[in-house]
Image (cartoon, rainbow, N blue to C red; front, top):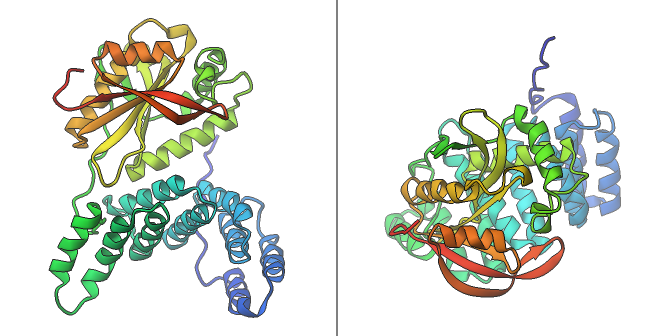
Amino acid sequence: MTTAKPALPAPLNDAWTLRIDEVWRQAADLSGDQLVARIDALAAERPAHDARALFERACARDTAGLESEAEPLYRAALAQGGLDPYRRTRAVIQLGSTLRWLNRLDESEALLAGELTHHLQPGNDAPLHDEARALLALTYAAQGRGKEAAGLALAALAPRLSRYHRSMLACAKQLADEVWELDAPPRPSFQPLYEGDFVFRPYRAEDLPEFVEAARESADTVGRWLGFAHAAYSLEDGAEWFARTAQNLAAGTAYELGIFERDTGRFVGGCGLNHFNVVHPLCNLGYWVRRSCEGRGIASAAVRALSRYAFGTLQIQRVEILVSVGNEPSQAVALRVGALYEGVLRNRLRVNGQVSDAHMFSLVPEGPF
């Protein structure tokens, strides 16, 4: 059996694109409904899952003020993986802007910061880098983080000044800390972690059936606190999660890993470092263990392995573990590894659609853990 090769991005000047471009040249004279209709008509000439067609349909809805309709189309276009670097970056930037308009500011920040980090990785193209920084600055402003917004905007402006660009860049870094300079050193690539009998690594396609099985079997345990674990969890759900984790890992915005037995390779749970604060050196650490593997110290091993990676490789200075009030097994793990209990945060988490108070635990490089 031969494996199908991924579709290559179509040339930027093919006949279909030229017709799309002509519609966009007329966009100022069209109503929102007219623009959407014309773009949709051209998109219908291409396969249903064509990334370029999905992207253009999203752009049309964005321009027409239909942000809630644009979002899933941007996500679908990115998931197809067939966009050229320029369009791919446009899709990420415009999705980040759409999320800002939808007041989903944390998601907007994570997406745009991830794109900027992606630009810094060796071998990656970096089109529209300053545009991505400008959009992230707008998200910072919407979050009420005016100093960081000003710093990031100043960082984009500084290289274009005829004088004072070095001092302006230094000021920008004081305001925003992370300014995503293209000549900054890249983040290290991830290598599997080991702790005791377990290995912690990114998900692979062959892990999918066992991952789905674990999610289904853990509906009554993990599912009480993490909504993905339920009896109807599907292969499609798992594949979407795997794709998202791969994208986040490549961008350095989250390290979501599977936990496997070193000897047998059996999948036993999941863990991750995520919600990185781009100003202050802290992040969140999470973990879950499939029902049939509970009581083996797996979550504790995950905390030790991930916290060492966070402190050593990523130079994080604070790792937070948030546990929903009532989740006593996870709370016991945090206490067992020596995390410091800092109290209850009110309305801190959303658990299966309900707002929940959360216990806050923290780890710092000085340990113990």
